[in-house]
Image (cartoon, rainbow, N blue to C red):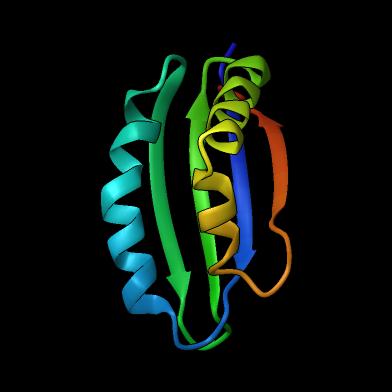
Length: 96
């Protein structure tokens, strides 16, 4: 059964141009990673919040991706755009 991953990020003001470049370079890797089914990113510019909304085949698939970006330094680069560490939630998808 698929799971939804919701990542909420409080962004550092003034880095949106650099963040756009970073996301354009790195989101295709997320989408192509084994187990990723969908990724979308939304912004609330007034409160400087970014929400990454993803569907994965399992929590394990997402955690393998997180380990991959931790090992290659991409996670640290992403965190450099944030004022605090992100909040990650794993939610079960329902089919009502």
